[in-house]
Length: 167
Image 1 (cartoon, one colour):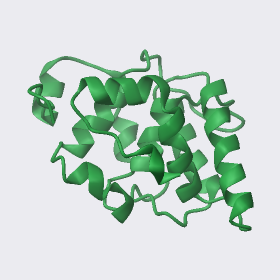
Image 2 (cartoon, one colour; image 1 turned 90 degrees about the vertical axis):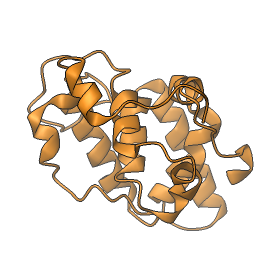
Image 3 (tube, one colour; image 1 turned 90 degrees about the horizontal axis):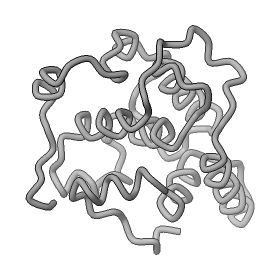
Image 4 (tube, helix red, strand yellow; image 1 turned 180 degrees about the horizontal axis):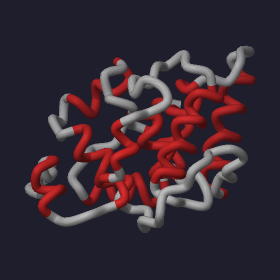
C-alpha cells in the first residue's frame, strides 16, 4: 500500500451522503460472500442490484467489482487481504466512482456497459477453454486485464493488483 491510507467507514460517513450509503444496501437479496463457483446469473444479479441502488442506468465495472468482491472472504481475495485495506471501505470507494442518482426500484433487464460486456466475453472464452459453464471465477480472472478505471483508481489508492498471470 502507498502512503495514502484507505478511509474508515466513519470517515466516509462524515464526508456526507453518497450513493453507497443508501439504506437498501444493508439488505442484499443474496449473501454478500461471492464464491468462485457461483453461477454467472447470481453474480450479475448482485452487480445489477448495486447498479440499481446507485440509480445507474447500466451495470458498470464498479458494480461488477463490488459484486465480485462480496465481503472479500473467498480465497481468491487473499492477495488483497494481505495488503490490509478495509475491504468494505475500498468497495464503497470504488462504488463512489459512479455518480449517485436516485435508487432504481427494479434490476430487471438492466443493460451492461461495453466494458462489462468485454469482461464477460473474456470470461466466456475462459470457461469455454475449460469446457465448463461460465462461473464467477471466470469473471474474476477476466476482470483484471480489462479493469479500466476501477483498476487505475485502485492503483492510485495504493492497491497492488494481481498479476495478469491470473488468466
